[in-house]
Image (cartoon, rainbow, N blue to C red; front, side, top):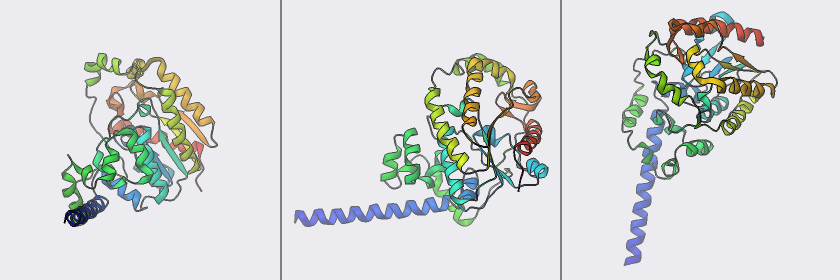
Length: 319
């Protein structure tokens, strides 16, 4: 009797486990259909619907700085901004690999670089955007950031704890419900004026920007691995250090020039790969072009995008 009972319990447990996997598959499939941020760009990548000649990778400083509308008009190309908020180089690799797997090879890759992109990722920002990307290829990257990833890979539905809105988001995907999306080809404009927080937080920021918590030697190895992948998937790679407000640069001190040198050395290892430094550009000296010390506003991004278009034309001749 006990044996039969255990067999029945095993079968019931297995049935429940399979049902949960099916339900999770259905939710993830719905998220892959969602047409709203932060899922839209991911899903365009998965569908192979971008296929741009120029792509921009990086964090929020890519997301906010590179305007494809201006660049397309100047260069007569199809460009796309694939910058992603709150991402450092380790997590950026997931988007890079997804793009290369599903879209044609771009002629030019612009990878925004800076100091904070080298910071180790301590927490997945907007973690629900990665739920449909729990694949074997991404496991090591995700697990190195979040120890809970192992259990989330094994136990179906467990990853959704604390993210109950995924059910609504999946339903939006299946019903093709699109809420307001102000992004243009991945670019998010911010027309705010200088927010004044830099002056108030300068002392606090100085403590953060001592960088003693970052093992740059280790992080640059991760970057070099990513750069090798970028170089293998494009004719020209530009490592661009976008403008940042000059007083912030003063707080970054000697680390700023050191990391610039490291990026330049990394670029020199590869054919048709160049480091472009905008930290001394005239934009950096005027608050009117920034909404905070690290991000250009709409006016600054428009001017910068004009300059980036000219820079791309200098280093690459389109077919």
